[in-house]
Image (cartoon, rainbow, N blue to C red; front, side, top):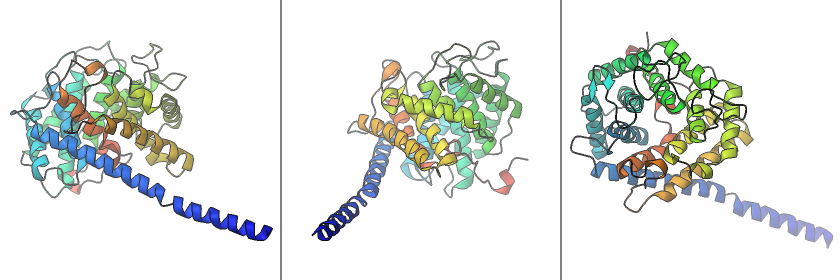
Length: 367
């Protein structure tokens, strides 16, 4: 009887495991479908609600239009095709029209955010155009030249500390979010063979590394003792783009974010910002260490937690709500562009979502 019972028990366990095993891929598949559906609904809304001049947003039209363009670029293998492609091209044209010899205008309280995000969007658009079959109806030489001039301006406005400030010509002022914005634009340009000053980039990375605290978080401003939450996510996402991976800095930041959790980020002042960079940082860490099961599970768990929160905020019409500090500062276009952008990161179509730069056609390789 004991043998029969044991066999029956063993068979029951095997059947239970067999029944449970398919559920894990099924759950992952359900999440992937929800992610794509939410992202596409957001992009559909943006396409239908683009301003006549090609922009989105109210106060920070340069940054918000850049978020929208980056969302389109990150959402499809052929981003310049179809109605979404037309909206993307119109958005890029708006950015080009608002640059004057490499300089974008200040909007609201900041110049560098518009300068950095617009440069990033134009750079990634230029880069995707090199690798896609469907080309945009826009002068790509003009796009490349605009990025080349813009990164020179960014370099000229680096502070003596290696960081950047909200406004140009501020050699003695600096902070983290402005530096993240500048550094990622420089990395993107470099990825696509557009000349940058390597010393400027190296100083930017070093500034961010110096901002890390013993807890693994990052200062708002070098030496201020703060442990930013969203800002730590942004620093990790940016330092993850260093060619030589700084293990200790990245692991300390990773552990800080795991303790913070996506749920906490969702209730901070800049939740879309925090989730965009949190997902990006964890994705870059995953690329580096995914062979380790615990590391793989932790990074993927964090990413899915952040994605689920953002998906849960979406309205039936595809819009995302304003949250935190941006309530009253911007219109729904900001939140919808940023929310859609958050949901494209792990598809890794943009160069800044990858540890390894894209392989370019020979004629576009950096000399």
